[in-house]
Length: 129
Image 1 (cartoon, rainbow, N blue to C red):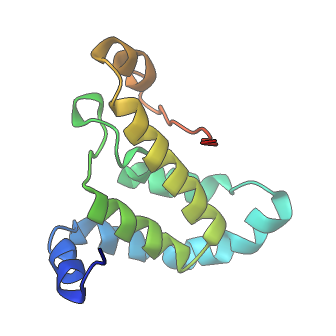
Image 2: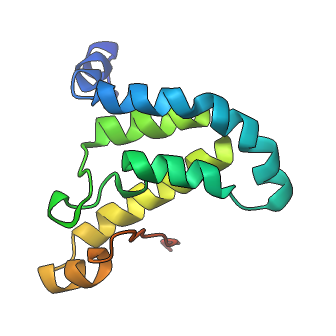
């Protein structure tokens, strides 16, 4: 089964466009930091701090723990928007979003441990076999 163009347009109706516009305002800075990210082999702190201030590092974290708890359409659009400026930053934000979502599926006591810190970010790897 394939997804039709109209179904994709319907998904875009559910995007938090205000958040995406806020991320777009950071693109010049993220683009300017892209070479440093490549050279340093880590993201420059200025970009992380700016995205954290918007809540992007906690896109899928539950609202009750200070996360944005966005839907998948918004998550994808935010990550796609960041990728226009810096693929490395986009990759890390996608990882935070996916792993934050996975952590939000655990029982409440685990979520409390994971998300209770104000700057909590979740990252991990998955290698299904």
